Image 1 (tube, rainbow over the protein chains, first blue to last red):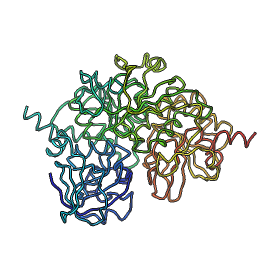
Image 2 (cartoon, one colour):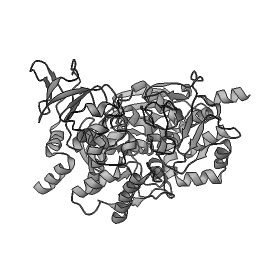
Image 3 (spheres, chains in turn orange, blue):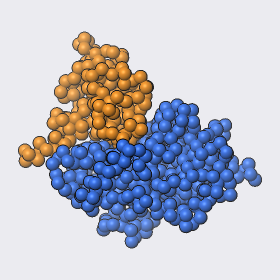
Image 4 (cartoon, rainbow over the protein chains, first blue to last red):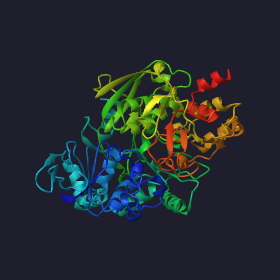
Length: 164
Length: 419
């Protein structure tokens, strides 16, 4: 799975209340949630997102509540992938379960807002679009990649029960 | 094996090691009015007609209940309909409460079990010796259908307790101390295992400590079930259970020693639960609101301690004080045992159980620039309302003393000033 896109930068400890404030949890519609994506961090953020953008984050992205609406908001806003130094456990699970690509890349340094990068989930590698710089990431375990490639936990489970 | 490993191993049917992925059967699964609608969608998408075992599934409407608006009412309608259709445990407004206060009270989550919940504070049940952890809705939908889940066996951080709790120091201060020490991701993919002199912590305090394990990123926060827990569950447990304990030669990723006797009441400053300082030194911080309640501190001892501070005193004219017992049963007990009168005559509001203000839902949302001392669990920017509002996390004694003085205060300072 290879994803190319423009970088939107955020910092450490971006919590789920920042990704989607609780007042919007009266719907499960990704498009509506997406209109408020990362509004808790900066009210202007949703307006800066272009479909296909990649969020590059610091440590502990997605900490806090278990709300899957956080992943739905990112998907609904058109974010293609999140690359972070580290993820909070529940957010990471939710992303995988909804087939939303996430990659942990502790070494990612020197990336700027607006840079274009290429994320290779299988190899566990991030490279600059110019082909110049590249960073090693923690490759996803085969079990997780299998779920991601199926499009999430539910399609994966359906495929498994039909195959069996 | 550690307590977490031992519980997972029993379910997996083989020894396990920290770091590995395992698939296990689940003993109990729950969701609330925010997370259940998506879990139900996931369940339907799987194409199953029936949940794996209706006696082992609970749906608890508690976040935006009593329904705060039309859209939350619609979400609850979906949850209620599904619970009826499937014959699940369902706790209607007026007969239920906040999930993590309610389910232990009903004996539905038990020692040695694996419990997964569509709520990050599901880790609360670790206080009873269950391996309990929060997950997202898709995970919950999958488990409702199959009775199974996948786990990454967490590394275990052992917390060795010694000493006695000083007056006005509570389980909240123990867990704030640990979060302050480790940071909000210091225990990511780890479980806390509390040991040593756990008898010094009343069960309600253990539930608070386990509840906020997730605020350090932990998967779970576990206490071995001692006689206090087994006694509490007598005549209450909804099923037979078999407690699990850690092996004496268990290997821990880290050991942290905490002398309870050396703890002070602590406060987590905005905007992180890890931003922890002693309450002393914050006297110049005026406040607008106090919230006493939530899945963290809405239990009997919490109400009792708050009432002890508020008895015969008045809430400061500049403060709104909102007290929220965690369940209907606790609310009724507060009425019967005179606590309701203490709160109401002090000028506090006594609310029916709801998560409402904790996540800025309703029943105490903050405006721009407003400051709240709260016994809840998170103080992220905007958590309780306006992005420019501030939340200070504290134990119920500190919250009640602050309500009286109109600024952050310890109960000791309150007594000193009046003495």
